[in-house]
Length: 404
Ligand SMILES: Cc1cc2nc3c(=O)[nH]c(=O)nc-3n(C[C@H](O)[C@H](O)[C@H](O)COP(=O)(O)OP(=O)(O)OC[C@H]3O[C@@H](n4cnc5c(N)ncnc54)[C@H](O)[C@@H]3O)c2cc1C
Image: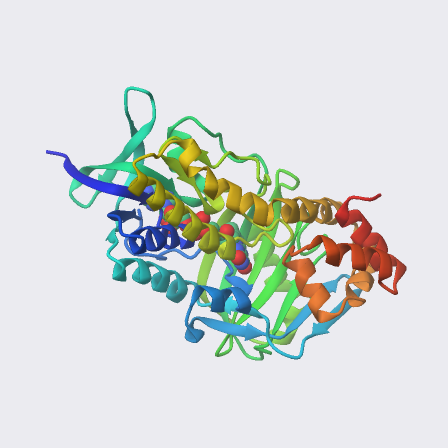
């Protein structure tokens, strides 16, 4: 007999978006199941885990989940810049610890977490609206009935694909990374490495985690380049290219690989009885393809809106729309601005990258952070585009805000 469960809300995917949605919904008093296909939450790490201390504090993530970063170094084939801040504002997460903390917060609020639960299909009512999901769990075929489903399955977008609402992402980033023990590490400094040899459409990175551990990775934009990021990563480590050389002897700890959508905010994210959040919704900052803080933030919004709708007895797309309205208001224009910079960056030659670093050099730490976070407030952009003492910076921000 297939196993059957009944919940108010089912959340598919135990990543940051799913755990955060489940947490906010259960906190609002409804019965929630969180379904994760792996053997445990964050069994496989598919991210580099860079985020921002301000957001970490806002979410209540404990201090022992991250390594603080104060200095931001960039290198291109013939140029180098370090922007040093007075206090650390960025962070490299212990991804497993953080994601497990998020899921544990949900569990503490009453969420039932099901691991080894691989969701494969959807259940629809006579109108064609989703009313549950099914898949394979530890006891075989398992069905979950629910009033609302949240698709937080990440890049795969399992639920909205099974509903026939979306196709595979066309533009995306593929990233490969080794977590390594290194001989010499400046634990407060991250490196972004740009130019053809690092990545023909993307960048490479060194992110320190503390205790002499670093994540060294390569990200490649698809379909712009057919370079295999794993192969390229091995090559740059073998050659000890650029700042990798300074790390001294390297010993592998773990390998990570992942895909992240880069199609912008092209998807609708609410349907009758269904919300899509996190990578499933394409909610990533395109400049450096970071999405963890959006996944947590809008996961919580999704959980709150879904649970309010369930409590009101009305769960159609109009009732769920406040979620889409919330994230669009908050990030849509910023992400559109960031895409303009990304379009510029993706086509740069090595010589042009060398010059681009000269522009980045002119930014004050807080300007740099707003820039790399894609936190382009209109008044800030106008200020930088009109009043910055350097012409090149004014030109860059004119481009970002849309003037040619
Ligand atoms: C190489 C790389 C580096 C990155 N670096 C950064 C970074 O430094 N900083 C940053 O902010 N972002 C980074 N990102 C992006 C970031 O990882 C994502 O934006 C973020 O993980 C999105 O969270 P999510 O919960 O939506 O999806 P995910 O983290 O992908 O979680 C989805 C979960 O759903 C589960 N799942 C999938 N299908 C099913 C199914 N059928 N049934 C049940 N469970 C299922 C998965 O196992 C997974 O646990 C990076 C991405 C990549 C690929």
